Length: 290
Image (tube, rainbow, N blue to C red; front, side, top):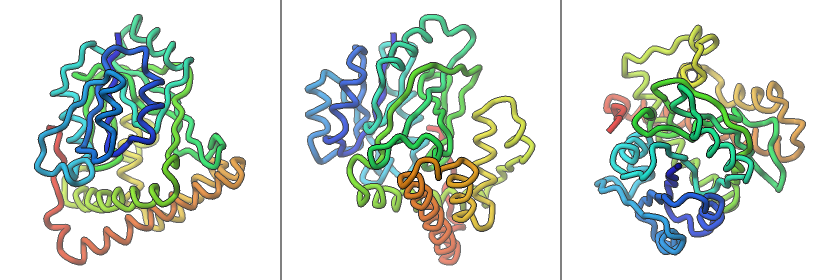
C-alpha cells in the first residue's frame, strides 16, 4: 500500500535501523548519491531497490540543489504504490506511526498528503521543546508533491493535507558532533546561495500569509522567506528556540541545540556577505523543479 523513499549518501551506520523500521513495506527505494561506503550493499541486503540519479553534479551535496534532487525522484522512480513515505537514514518509524500511516492511506478522504510528528534526540534525550517545528510532510501522493529551495526545501502539496498519529524518531547527532558541524557547513553554503537567489528573484514573501494563510505549508514557505530577510538572525534564532519555544526545559540538550542552530545561522550570514561581496550573487541560481 505504501512505497518508501530514503535518500542516502554514506549511511552505512544509520541505514540498517531505518530500513528495519519500514520492513513492513515491500517497495523500499534507497535513493543513493554515489556512496563510497557500504550503503548500497546494505540496502540490497535488505531487499531495497537502489536508484542513483544520473547527474553531472552528483559529487556535490544533493547535486547542489536538494529540491531538484527530490523532485527528480518523485517523477522518475517507479514506485509500486500510489503513496510514498519519505524518510531520512537517521530517522526511525515507531510501530504506532507505521500503523497510523497504513490506516491513513486506506481511508485518506480528500487528503493527498499527511504530516507526521517528529521527535529529535540529542544527548540521549528527546528535545521536546526546542524544535522549530514538530510536524513534517512525509506521506504523500508523489504526483501531488513538489519541493522548492536549494537546501532544507519546503514541501508544497497540491491538495488537502491531514495528520497521522505516532512519532518519527530522528537522531541527527548519531554520527557525532563533528559530522553534524561538517554537514551544516555544506548546508550553510547552499543557504547563502538561496538567500542571494531570493534577493535576485521576483519572489515576494508576505507577513500576512506567514501568519494567517490557511495552509500550514504556505505559512512555512512565507515564514522561512521572511526569516532570511531579518537582521540579527542568529540571535533571533537562539531566543526563539531557547526562550519562546522553551528550549530551556530540555536541559543541557536544549541549550546545546539552540546554540548550534544560532551558529548555523551565523555561518549563513557570513557566507551570504562573502558571496555578495565577491559578485557571485549576480549568478545566483534559479530554483529548479525538474
